[in-house]
Length: 438
Image (cartoon, rainbow, N blue to C red):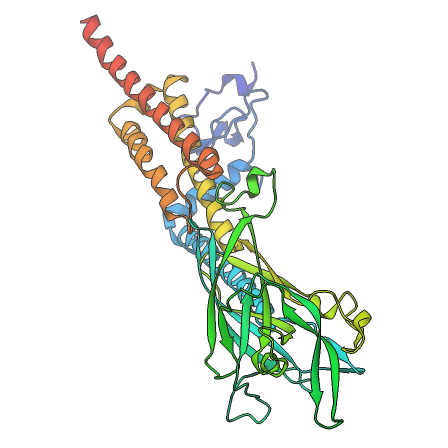
């Protein structure tokens, strides 16, 4: 019999030190002796040899982490660092989304200009500057306050009307009338030329609806303004995800308005009502509305299809048949709002699925210890009333019934309610069985 077979399974205190045995005066390592490493035994049952812990293995990481937790320094630094990183990422995302909104507003404020050429040189032009006031979702109207600007042909920066501090700012004592949702048509206007002492004629534009009333007058004072309510409808048809309100937060809106400007001095000169139509050569859009993003495109029909065409008011063939300015608005939700709405849906589903998994583990997998006490039951009923209230935190949310309610609110509430009922029934059944056995 070998010395190893004679050796006991565990060396006695008198015959061994640690994990060795004595052979005469020689200390021999026992291949089947138990070895302790940080209070855990590691023995290879197949060959009876010691299995060393490989560095960076799962077991090594577990032991290292357990040792670090006992000290407590590095785990605290780790979770504080993770929290700080998440905070920095959140602030970075918010600043990025807010910066995108500022860039969008600057683009609208920069505006767009398209004017006629007369005799090979650009004419002076007037502009309208709109300030967004409010968007009424229920009435589907956008309130915009408009004021006038004047664009000299030798300057790219428009100026206000009747600004006494700026010599380039003109004043129209008779005013410029603004008409809404009308157009203008050509007519042959005759006048007496005092210089040539003859009667001359030119082609000019007149408002096509002579009974229309102007909605505002600009050009007399620098503070002249007028207000409009622009009706909005759906931008894309046959797409439920983009329908107004129904497709929140991805809904797309569209609205438009038409303006015609009439120079009262010219109308009086021709002695014909609303016969001094002049082009509106540019549009600017300022300010913003909470939880909404609006962009615009405008069409100046007074310039015709070719912006480089030279206009000759004595030649009807060089003039467009109509003269008005059409502004088309597109409305949508800003990326910041979309991010918040999607995040709310993700939170709802995460909580609902987590509760669903806990319920299945407790009931289906028969982990009865999870049903002890009222922890899981109270969590289900708390979530049942807490998850629907997340919707009230959504910015600019419409009335209940949007697609987001059918996707992220209602199903989560039903899942949590079902889990609460199942847990309650399981707890009642568990209490009933011991009484029945007695």
